[in-house]
Image (cartoon, helix red, strand yellow):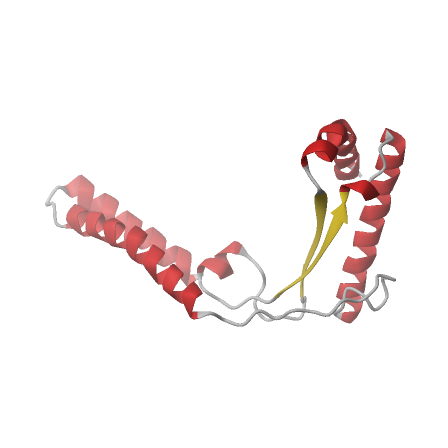
Length: 163
């Protein structure tokens, strides 16, 4: 409930400026299947495990948002109720629309692209090669303190990616 109150305050406080500067608000709903073997955690993402997310995005024109503070707060509360229904519907049926009362839209599945792989490889080369060079230089320096730091970095990385 605290989150809703803060959201209402920020929306109503910034509404006059938002209406002048922004043509629309994006309403985004993200959900993950609870039955998936891989849980959606940052560590699983860093380990490269495949995670499937379901996203529902809707563009809301600023003309749909009421100007009055009380009406805008009520509108935002109704938006959160709608989002809660969509989330509950997803967790019950695996679909945002079946029991939520929201008009269904056709889903989009994005294919894997070679450009994403090339982009990822390029950034790995740009970031990991200098780090690997410095780590190897640290280990071969002959200075005990630098060797210990290098070993600690390797051990930490190995430990982090094993669990």
